[in-house]
Length: 99
Image (cartoon, rainbow, N blue to C red; front, side, top):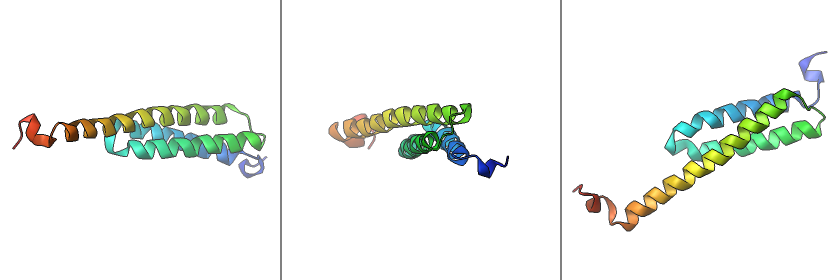
């Protein structure tokens, strides 16, 4: 059987790729928003793959990696926003000693 004939397998592969890329984006603070978006896309693709009847370990791995990418991407994004807010509330960089 060809890979194109198995319903949901391409969505599972796309979910796995989105999950891996979202995990990679964890390490870059400016791209944590992209990690969040790719994680959500990966979750939707994993759900579509399951609805199509493909329930293999490939789909499960894509779901787990996308879920981790979504959770940690959101945490990093919120912490970056909080840091910017703290620096802004402290009076900017002049309050930190930089002129």
